[in-house]
Amino acid sequence: MINQLIKAMEKAIGEVRQWPEKTVHIFHHNDADGLSSGAILTRAFNRQGFEVRRFCLEKPYPAVLKKIYEQEGKILIFADFAGRIAPLLSNLNRGRNLTLILDHHVAEASKDPKVHNLDPDLYGLKGDRDISASTTCYIFARTMDQDNCDMAHIAAIGAVGDGFFVDGKLVSQNREVAMESVRQGLMEIQENEKGEQYILKSETGDIAYDELAVYLGILGAAGYYQKGPDAGVQVCLDGISSESDRMMEEFKTIKTRVFDTELQKLKQGALKKTSHIQWLHVKDRFSPMGVKMIGDFCYTIRNMDFIDPQKYIAGFQVIPNEIPGFGHIDFNEVKVSMRVPSYLEDKIKEGSTAPLNSFLPEATNNLGGFSDACHRLAAATTVAIGKEEELIEEMERILTTFIRKD
Ligand SMILES: [Mn+2]
Image (cartoon, rainbow, N blue to C red; front, side, top):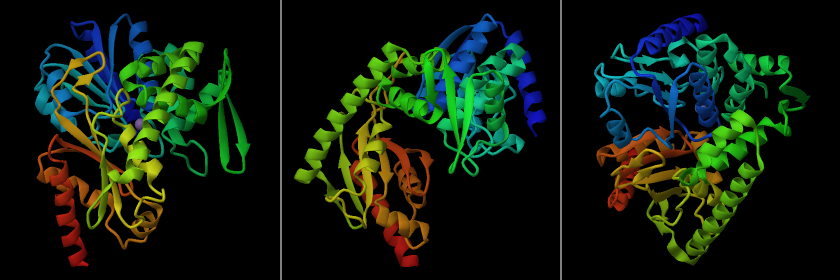
């Protein structure tokens, strides 16, 4: 399994070395796993003498992919997303760029030999148990050059950050990077009643890996439009600095202020209600924070006293027409994030209420929108600006049918 993956990585690395252009374009996610993936790849390719252009994306939106694939002759690398959309990337690429996918989500095989899908899911490993994107990137970097094994402690950031443990412990490939970090004196593992606590031993002091992941999450999400991801990658490579601390505090302050203002609006009646859904629209009031924050906000309010415990929660946030460092993009789209109050969560878990992924993707599709991460208790998609009410109506229509079927 893992040997087959390493073989596929060797093949891709061989093609990278022979590729005429010596610049790599890295696109990575903005959570702790994505930031540590971006950090590992940047250092690994710099060490090989490549110039690195790194871009942090909140999602691989179709409009962004279209712009990326207007290029030709490039080396394009996707980390911590895109495993599932390898067929789409194949269609966009048509042999014109060398594309590598280093993801760990559920994957589909590529249809273009120049698109190498190196997602371990295709090799029998479980992305929600065995291996994070950061560990996938670490194995890739080590396959490129054995000296890159000094980045095991960076891989562990994503492994812990994604939060997949068995009995409170990292397992499989994720465990191997932890063990390697311990061997190199960069990690300490403490046993406790819940499992294991992982501590990074850095020059600037010790820090628990789960705390570091939260820290990076704030830089990457709340600080998305203010160079937070760059600071996050720097933290992964060189540790926390007074500058990263200053930025983190600033982003936390912005988040508190913006959330408090929005809460006041909701308490004054800004929450709209239909038969099964309660919803809100923050327009661009969450700016300059990233669009991940609307999901965070819906989760924060889910059990507050003005929330109906029996209705789904939907929040809309306008997606800025810009990708930091990548330039202007005409999205003209709004993101919708959905969460559920605890009461509904129990109903969904016992199977007596429709989970979010049974109606949001379908409703989004019917309106020509883009579905990405949809789970039972948390889901998000995007639709064109102006279609918000229509989306709510479409979900109501599907839910009504669903309930009748019962
Ligand atoms: Mn991940």
